[in-house]
Length: 66
Image (cartoon, rainbow, N blue to C red; front, side):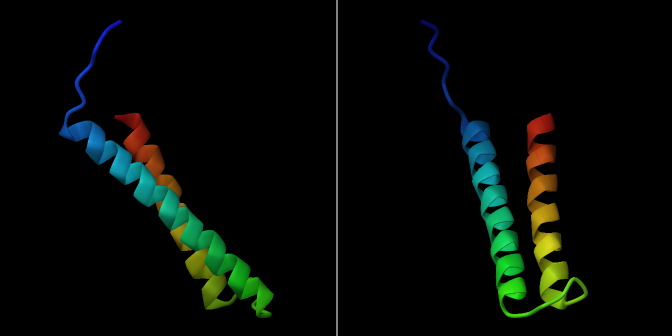
């Protein structure tokens, strides 16, 4: 068995991934609340929900490339 030491970079990557998933979750919640309260596709809640989801996915993509 090979024992690899985890450095600060691994903790940082895990924190970034956890934060990204949390941001995606916020975006999904914003979209759900917007639609449940009668919002439409042109409402601010819809746009902010998409923005949060895109931000989280983009951050996950960037952190996965390294």
